[in-house]
Length: 507
Image (cartoon, rainbow, N blue to C red; front, side, top):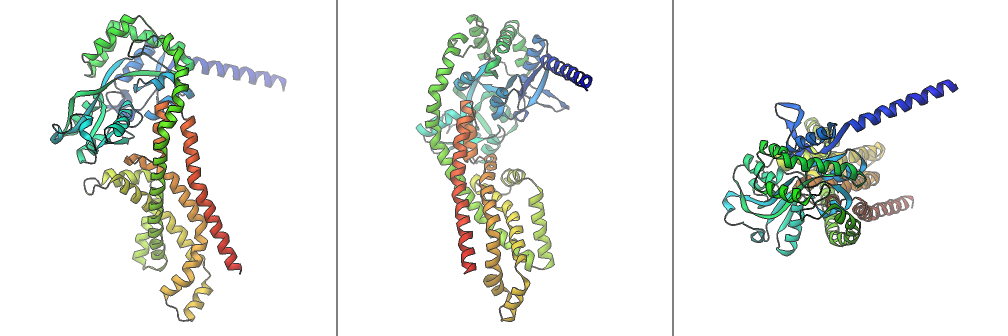
């Protein structure tokens, strides 16, 4: 037995050593391929490989480190949290340089300078030139970006309405359809999107300037420093320029950025203003602490508004679900064979397909037929989805009422409508109350999915909050507290109603 234990220990040590050697021989880099070219996307000619300038930059860094690049998929808004978790070594996916990121992560020197630009419909190019011209208008952008922060400021100071998206494709398609009036995003994204979406025009004047960087965990500064040296070398020998020229992204801004970085002689953190890593990192902790409370004060009103939207959305959707569910259940119990067949098919179709897919089809897929407002589409989508589940609850409750009571009611001369409304319905409702409450709480949480339709409910606003400050701790705690504040009173009220009805029945 002792020999077996020794052999097992040796095997485990060998496996651990091999795993460690494999980990150090790879450069794991995280990105979001949903953003597409020119950042990172599946090669149209070979979907098994990735292409894009961030892909080539990752390969350049890995080659100079003597490692093999390995891509790890992660959604754009989760890159910061994933790199802290250790899911990969560096995040590269058009990641913007922000003070919050520098306070929480080890950030590389900038490798590309971009401009925030305003895109409008061709017919409005002379009407909407600046953010000031968009008072009272809807302006879309990608959530968790510098552009979104700019729009939040403009919403307060200039009276426009910021609309956030989970991707950078649908803002431009919605602009084309007239759902929004402008889009504010990076010139790299704007150029690509206007090329494939006819009828749009990007204004020449930039709203702001930013930089793309790589992000690493704050404990990984040694690797960050080596990567900074590789990037500076690639700026000097022209390899970065060659990559951006290949992807047709080279412009006059890049030589100026590279000249500033090379002239500074800094191989570590160099923000856009040229401050060195030692000065900036020394201030990072205090900056983060000073801004934490400021961020909470800034975002708490938005979280409360989003919670209000969640409540209103959930109540309306549940009302629709209850009404439609009752009709479906009644039709399946009392309807003819064709009616029962159609209603059963509807229930199975809805229950057998994802809610997210249904929302996409309702809002985007049917846009050429009917252009529903985002909030209306969210209510209808959630309501019709939950109607299928509610109908099964009501059908089961209706069929659970003893047949002897139904026959007795008919013997007394009641017609089927009276039997349903006076005998069967009230008893079925009591049986269905508990599962109905559970469904309402579930719907309250599933409302987070409607963010894909640009409805900024509580979870979406929390996600934006967390992305902008680089942490989920405070935003997550606030979000959980608000959800509990919404769901617990509902559950308590339902329990009281159940007890009241039980007491009435016993009497």
